[in-house]
Amino acid sequence: MKINIYLLIFILIFIIIFRKYEYFSELNLENINKLNDENFLKISINEISADLIKNTYYGSKYKSDNFMIIMDNLCGDYLNFMDKNCTNLYIITLLPNLNLESSIESNKQILTNYLIEKLNFINKSNLDNVISSIIHTISNLYFNEYISNCI
Image 1 (tube, rainbow, N blue to C red):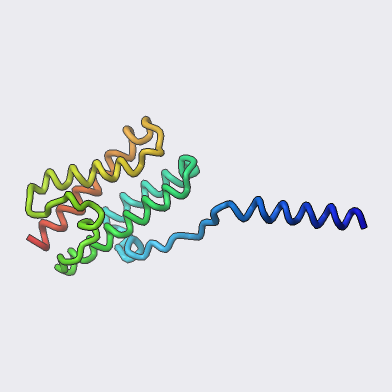
Image 2: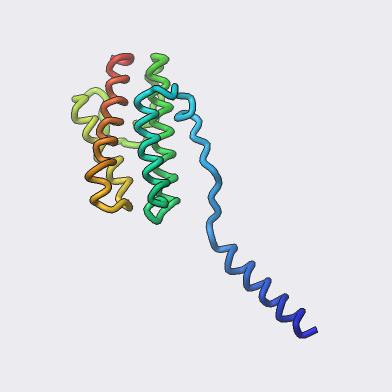
């Protein structure tokens, strides 16, 4: 009988402790998946995703997932640009200080800086060497598609 009480206490403690952990489900990156596999934007995003996974999310799956959700939403804008639908853009809610009427180069820089800031949990050497150049490419692709179809 004493063993059953200890077992019950152990199970209750186990449940209480593990209820505090956040459970992660697989992300549904619908917009990224809609892009053609040869699309350079998709390839670039997948390179970042692979780096995050390879480095066990740099200790923060939560921040990694949030970053990938931002990427997915930007891909939604990109898909809209391809359809010449240039209204209700996610980037406007993401970056309220962004002005699409101003210089494209300054907008590219604002987006690049924002995305790099969102990756502040990655150690500086990896961010400087690999990922920052990919982020720069993503910003260029995003705004080049905007220029091609919305201006």
